[in-house]
Image (tube, rainbow, N blue to C red; front, side, top):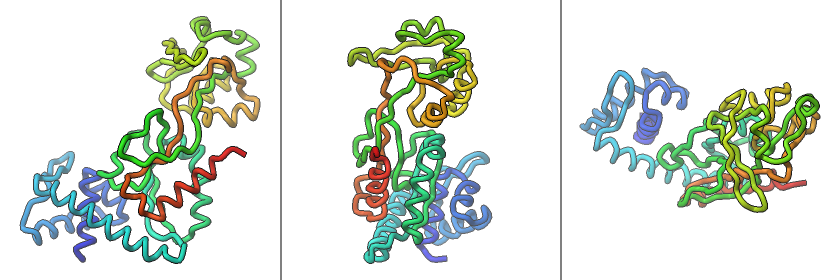
Length: 291
């Protein structure tokens, strides 16, 4: 086992917080991960991890070594990518984080096409709604829907993400359409657990607390509930696009459409030198261009 591979395994253990997750991400056994970390500690003559029954955490020396590992591994990866991609053919591993529903409903076809164009490329797509630490967790890029991209990251805007309010034709036939957000108190609503809806009224942001008949943190579930006639829902456009096209739901309160920000491809400043990262960001911007 060479030093770089020991560094990779150790860095993945620290990022994952346990041997099991690290092993799954590395594609090797948990026992091998544990053994390699112990071998690394023996070679260095230092304890790098605090071990408990629930979680692993780096010691003070372990944190220092982890930071150095990330820098070294990044330099090695970028050097290999620069040489292997000199012919214009992308190679290497691209690590991406994306929100769950956006990944399955929107990002997946774009990513599939990009990989078809670059068959030597490998991709690790982590689908998770949490806000990942791009640098600390070793991601090359994160896709986020936000009004304010993180400072210190390169932000490439892909597309707007307006809020669309809609319901089924059957619901409209039974209850009629609200003419303004203030009338929503008289309607059945489907919302997130927070129950707060955003509207724009003559350029001003209006926040309205609704009392939903169905609360959920899953946009696809909420859209299906609206299509079934359970009430009015407010979701980012990509959730309801297909249902609107099929006539399963129709838009209401169009003049009050809210805005939760835009979809961005975010990556650390130092990843601007990566042809792989820049190429994927360029591809996504072209993919999301209207028309």
